[in-house]
Length: 201
Image (cartoon, rainbow, N blue to C red; front, side, top):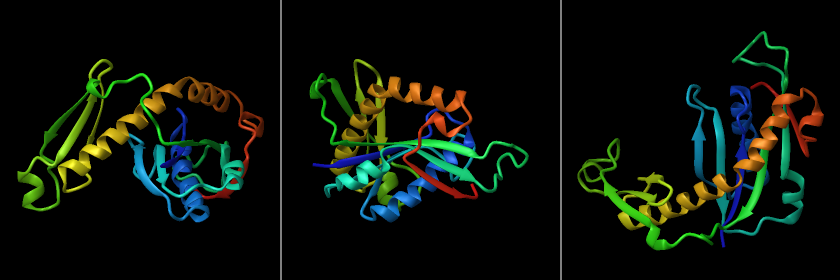
């Protein structure tokens, strides 16, 4: 069984998106065997992510889950995005969950399309349709995967990422609630952080 850890900025500003990247680095120190399986980059600033999802096949100790799950505070000592901004406390959320199933979705409702990967990778990548797009027909949710050179491997990854997308959608109400809390308050009360870090953004 795979285990997932999602770090999210909610709908926070670019500073929260940068904090996602920084908190991810700290998390990887605590759990070095994590692999990045999905991410949502900030649409304007490189090196910043609205969310990052990691996976591992190894069981995650309960002590780490208890230590990390919840709201994380990053107190910025330097803000290159808005140097004159007075606020220094930026919050992100971390959620642990196990492999996602499709309790209400039929496999027959998912369609797979192959396409050329494009980009770097040599002639084989450009000529052979190794990339796979998985679409849930009733909702229109879709993901594209071109990480691997094998079409079958990309199909497996595409299905996994589609499941993650469903998981994110199901948790949207909770995430929105947390985001409102983070946005409406400017004290530690906003997230009651389980862990705090300090450093430049």
